[in-house]
Length: 154
Image (cartoon, rainbow, N blue to C red; front, side, top):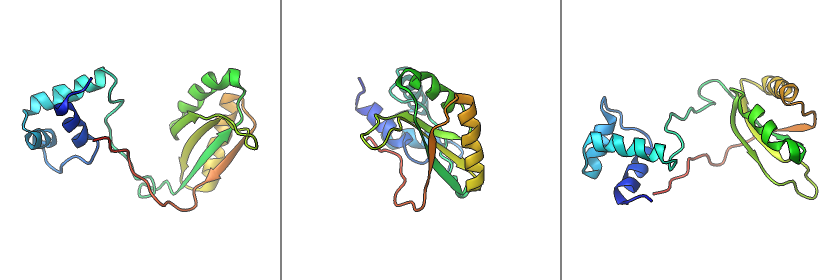
């Protein structure tokens, strides 16, 4: 269970850090607690599994990764767990998840990959295919981004 102070901490850490040499002290002051308590609450939320991770978000286009593709994989049900773990280990993968196949769409496992150009994305997918021993896959390249934000909970 989380209390109101935890919600305030989560609200602050889900956004950008203040441009300050002591960003956690600034955020702690905003909600009326000490920096030590702010950091302790953040660590506790992580230990309890309420927050999964705390890290930087790279804007991949600005960093030179101008191509990205969702790779849809046709994976037998019995191999989903193992294959998902194999694909998720690739450095170029930022998302990897399972969805139920649909009547006219047999793909069940998805991974988002990033490369400097489309050819690199194809090479990445080929390496992943060999590692996972899955030959049936399709790359769906992003053409236009309409919205990209992180979820805000509080």
